[in-house]
Length: 527
Image 1: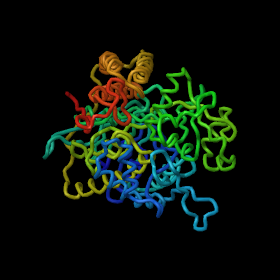
Image 2: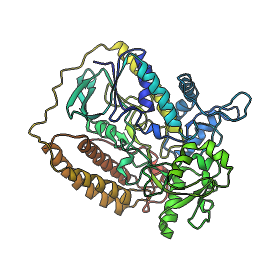
Image 3: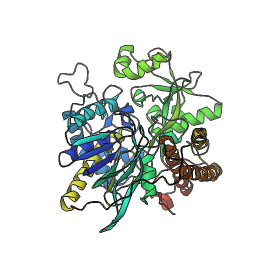
């Protein structure tokens, strides 16, 4: 039995594993092959105070401003102040952040992104997440105290009565290659499963982002919060053959202009900072332009910048666009908004601990209070490494005083379930959920749209429950069940908030109402 069971293998999970392995045994469960995770697709960078011109106060204020009154100030201060130390650790592991060309001391090239008042984005060209994951995986694979189970998907958490109430002792996990269910116990379990972008029709997320950790925690009785605050990235590549390819916000930080298809710029009429406005404002502006004029997309134009600079600063984006016949050095890029980042999640305290003893959460799956109603660009990777450290410190202290072993858990019982010969039902329902969420619970919402979504998702969940108990579990079925659960919870949270704030915009309540709604939206099983 390992000391730590870490479910997920993004930046939060991997960085936590390295710290925990110095004190005990670690088992990482990931449903795909390393390095597949949301983290690996992060392009822009990781935000932290790094230059003499910047300050903790400025970074905190930018975060609070973006969060629209719902950030937990103590968490914001902790993450901002601890950020530089965590980045120094990434550098020590071998992460190669980009340096300024021609600088005498090879200074880091700090980027500027929307919502930031200073240049503070450390990046590795335009593939920062990929570079950090590379360095972490290299270290994880070499560590003798870390075991990795790839192609394994969590089903449900193992819970039992303890000294202080219910406790988490691990999880039932499906081996996706053998279709066998394993009972994995551990002294501490940490959800690092990422977000749920695949609940929407258009998303920048990879296929693994199906909200598994969110749904597992909810079924175990752990509160979730602020799921109405789903960040839609303003600029995802619009092309029939391009799947989920993000065009980084860093392009707008370097001067890219958003234009209508006829070339007319439009952001200045929506916000005084134009293209550098916070993401929610930019996404709504694009959505408005598309719906008002019937556009299928808008254009992101950075062709006025030097071609050599663009190829050097954005090599991955440049190469990917060229694959689709788009040369960003000479022509604009067609873009649309897409579901990108979930600001809510499993409720944790400032140490990453949940309400269920022995269960922690870190990264996008968690609601720590950092992001509030809207995430400031590039704060997500920062939160992941800071809370990975905080989870380790807290869990390590707990394990040092607790030597109990888990109760006996039964093996997975499939009952009378049989193999399904109707997988078309899973595929059809998956597409139905994603389309109804896009149409009714997207960038702009209304009471009527949410009511329609709520009625339909209830019927879908009834169908899924019947299917789930009649047939043997598969990876596709488990992901479908999780997607439906997360969709229901997003709809519930959105329906409960009778105002517009941050990433949640509703036509029926277009203004923010601090007097009544300046609080988190919390949902629990059975409520």
